[in-house]
Image 1: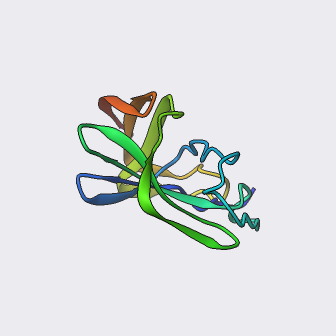
Image 2 (image 1 turned 90 degrees about the vertical axis):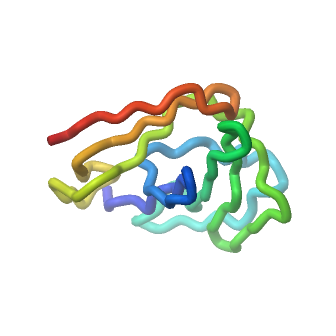
Length: 123
């Protein structure tokens, strides 16, 4: 599998590449125009943001057509760990999310609310 385009997570004003792909709730009408290629098998890239007392929001989805929202959507359907790369790249793997960075930052989300942040050192 080709290296995949990551979802984006914005936290404290910083954009980070996610290793996980939360469901963008495709049954809702605000997700449209999926398109797929070998660098993006899921067919879209979501941008997410944690703000407002630790709430997770879906800010936009880019696919076959870009969908920007007049207001971010509170992602209360997301209950999982969101993992992002941090630091310098240690090993590049041109497959999925196989590359390794100095750290992985893990955001524990329950029903759209940030419960915990932890760091895994990969050095």
